[in-house]
Amino acid sequence: MADGASTARAEPGDSGGLSRSDSLPLAIAWVGEGLQRPECVLATASGRLFASDRRGGVMVIEPDGRQQVLGTSSLVPNGIALQRDGSFLIANLSEQGGVWRLSPEGELSAWLTQVGDLTLPRVNFVTVDSLERVWICVSATECGDLYPLDDATGYIIVRDAQGTRVVAQGLRYTNECRLSADGQFLYVNETFGRRLSRFRVAADAQLSDRVTLAEFDAGDFPDGMALDAEGGVWVICVGSNRVYRVSADGQRQTIIDDSDPACVARLEAAFVARELTRPMLSAASGRRFQNITSLAFGGADMRTAYMGCLAGESLASFRSPVAGQKPAHWHWA
Image (cartoon, rainbow, N blue to C red; front, side, top):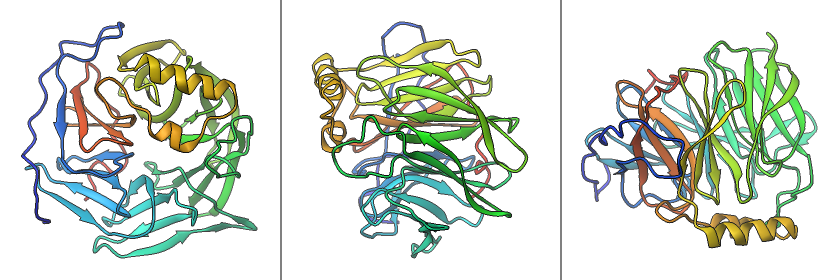
């Protein structure tokens, strides 16, 4: 393992249930140290955590707190997906774009850069479902620092035994997506549409019957997502540092509101004026959290929530009153 190992982590105390108020959970624990842009976080049954790392690879955090960066490169890892063989797929947010494979030994290779005549630009997210199909989210065809706030050019790609193809288009800045436990629905965040959308999934992975399951407030930009064991969708909003739980019928509950009113006002004004930029949103922070972007359920009972972020050097962790849905990779690695 690398030098500079972190202190072993302890499970945060049980908060006794999360209210519908804007207060934070009663107990927050911090996991890891010296992390660089840990935008995406994965948890496994072994207790190992994995986070995307700005140095071009994946940070491995052991249950005893030891840390090691696996792989370094010019990539900007955003979403990451663990594979059965211990490798990772990396959604590359640099101008080079594409999805890359990081081997268990730390070697990088291009995994997907082209779909037919379509060259992949910056890729936001990648995930694997229980059938080991790979789902890939491209936010927009225009990838400059000035966000294309009104464009609906985001799309979703699936790769499986039948090949690689685009299965949904016309999304307003596609962000994270997740498949329901029964495999019937795919949920996806449309960041600048400020909505959580849901598609019906056919046996061949084609998507149809898109509906808006929930919409979000001023200053909210839905980014990360996790599903719980009761069918709830947890949505993490970049910029506002808010976490919501959306029930299957679309009811929205505030779990965390760590928003800084002045920061939210600036973001909202820039959004309304159509002047919101990537650096502006990336630099946002809350009162306590450094721009949370994702959430992964872990722990022996799947009730420990770990949050990734853009600007933090640690992961924030708290106890959830609802167990998470086990991801496909839960027993891998």
